Image 1: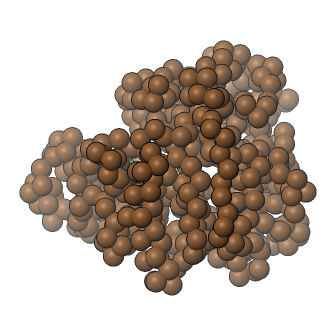
Image 2 (image 1 turned 90 degrees about the vertical axis):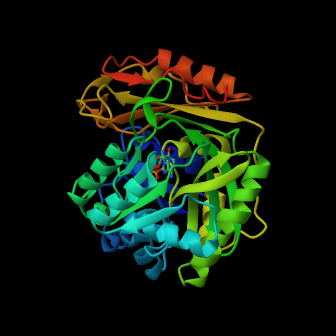
Length: 420
Ligand code: AMP
Ligand code: GLY
């Protein structure tokens, strides 16, 4: 099978790594890929948000199966274009991708599904939004409706913070994504992420993870795309996962099917758990990054079989086979991230780190320049390890970091603290 993965971050390196271990894969191309991916697969330049160009590329390269990593091509309808061209694709349609692309759509679907989530109201003008905030009081959560690269959510601990978030959003800080605003009740509890495959009819949970969104140790400082993750998430016990499937995921999927937009692909349910009761924080229509890295480390080659079965509508009767193991990934980022940072610094020592089924360095933002690996993004490397216990996975990951010589980079030193 000739396979194309769209994307070029740590998530896609982990997907490529899992796919390459499966003998079904004859040839793998990743677009655009990165310096780490280039060591295991062919990388191609391609406008991955243009469905027509992706279809043409697949025809020229005889691609049999496409895995769409990030949300942007999904929201742009690339899965629809591939589907119409008869190319087997892992990733939801543009209509179904609204579960991530529009927060007000998601809230409305949750209402129809009676899925437990935060109480909310939606606004297209500042004055009524502010009146609502004054009436509700703080803490309160203000969200831009559309895709805002993870920055469109303000968890406001004071009323003033919430009011100024309204000004920012309607003032255009998030562009079209902020034309509509959702204001939510502040939920307390512990967060965890549940990953579920859906082929439009059958649902298959494929693992849990927890990430660290704040940049600094002790969960301090500004929010990031994620500074580390581990799997499984202790807060998502079997009982909590069952409740989340029965009360949140399955009813949402039913509503999507009833509305003529069956969901096909991986659904990432961000959950807030309090006293054993999960509530939905948000859906994403793709694997999380860096959560995917720990899931792939644990699933290995079977990930490809499961994604193909999902895309073919043949999930019924399938199972994910888990070893009783744990995985952790620690993100190394360029100093300054998530604010301004420099690109181009040289990273040394990566060649000395052995790549095995127990430990892998996934590249997130790297480029090879004159034979050297250089940083080309904010989040740059994902140091990923597996162990019989989470402590063993952590020790292995941090030992790998010892061998990396990159003075311009940094990482959190406490990934997994909540679970350890
Ligand atoms: P999102 O981009 O929707 O994942 O939101 C980013 C983060 O904001 C989440 O991971 C939560 O930590 C937090 N958050 C979002 N909505 C709420 C809520 N209603 N109550 C408390 N925290 C929230
Ligand atoms: N790590 C969070 C996300 O992928 O959205």
